[in-house]
Image (cartoon, rainbow, N blue to C red; front, side, top):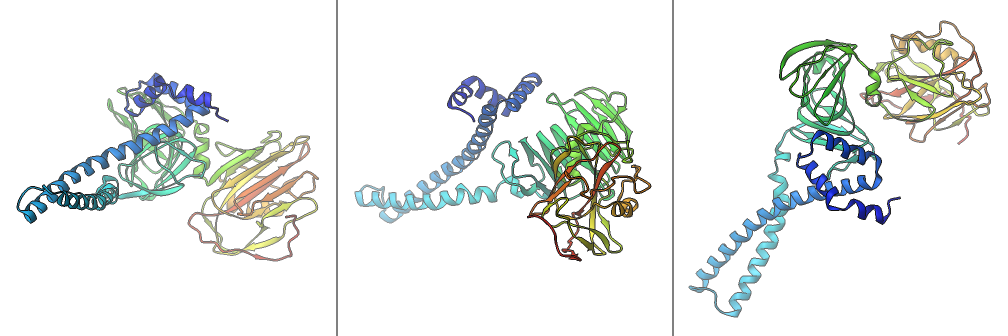
Length: 479
């Protein structure tokens, strides 16, 4: 709750002068970091910031419209005066002529002001004239800087996306996808080029988008088919981590150098690239989860920044935690797949879900959840995907059947039907719950020492138009 005292305290001229300097680009690196810290830790400061940015955008648009209206007023006055001079043969003198002059000018002003005040301003704006370069998608909780609103919209060349809180995805028409986490300032240069002014951005570049370019204040990057991330500080200093594939990177004082997967390079404005250091995928854990189609996790569900070496028994022990990682994306089923139906509801030892066949031709992405030694405190949390859940592999036989085709190539899976594998609701505390929109899965996993619970989740792929599956047995669930 933000009280009146907080609002009055933050509306002082010093704070507003700081915001004005920030908008005008007059804050140095230290002052910018101080402002960012204050906005991250002070609710009242955040509210003032958002309202001030909205006001700034409104005034900027108003100033442009007023200049156009002023020109229109001058033109209308001149035309009206000429009209009545021609009609009367002399200057306007009578009261009747004066009223006629005023009414004519008012009518013209109303019509032309409406026309020039907003439709013409939009039609003549550089923003609308710029070609479309892609689109963005953001959650409803997104807090944009300035006057931007909405969860989805087209983005055009030259447009900047500035956000204060939340994370969003940019889908460029060239094929690259950029995951951005606020506070962040990203500019769309073209359908295959971005500039990151500050913030954390991770980019996934498919083969068809090879050659994608990214700029920061201190570094230029050319993609060679990869997954990489950048962290840009307020003073322009950049960390660039190559997670898959390879890139070329340079600064204003050095030529392009190739950087392979597993390595990172750093640079400050006006300096050369630093020597290579090991890449740190955990720096971009939130961006990677967004690229993998994971919108959010809560409670005891933890997204791993990189796939584990093994999910065999005693190899991934994290008490009271269910570890989640993406496995295979956009896999087309070549034959029907028997899974647990992803019907909304709560399932436990007394309410088992039904089995169904996911038909051949369905395109899916798979995710794996692993919990071990989660008693006496079971792992309890949720994961929300950006697309509907189609089915679950809960039984040991279902997991074994799908390991080869849908498991991650770098992860070792159990080779036998080991004790406790799956989530068969044998433990009284085991629960699975699916939300009404089938995008959120809640798991409660309680397994004793020497046992583990595992679930493979099958989610609709982005490019798929999957239909609902056919059920085999009557449903037995608690609503």
